[in-house]
Amino acid sequence: MFGQTTVGANGVSSASSRMFRYEVVGLRQNDETDKNNYEIRRSGSVFVTVPYSRMNEEMQRITRLGGKIVKIEPLSTVK
Image (cartoon, rainbow, N blue to C red; front, side, top):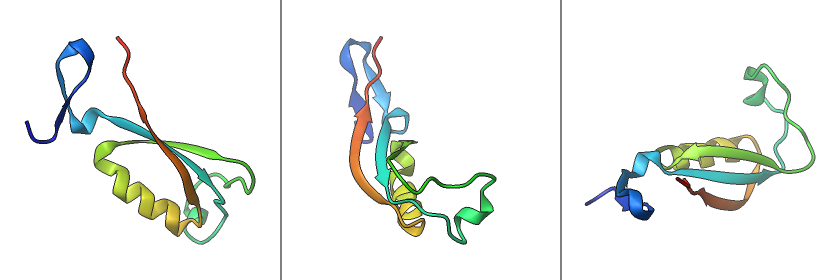
């Protein structure tokens, strides 16, 4: 079916339930991050977990914050 994937022996799960983890470097404090209640670290990697349906929005947000995505990996569900 369109928008679905088979996950192991558990059958079919929707694309929206798939989760991905981005490894991001280079985030910095700016006008966009000033809206947050916390500061952004300047060093090291930050890991961001997002559902498949929000991947594009999150990539755009990371770019606005000055970050660079160095790795994207799917999170598997083990049952």
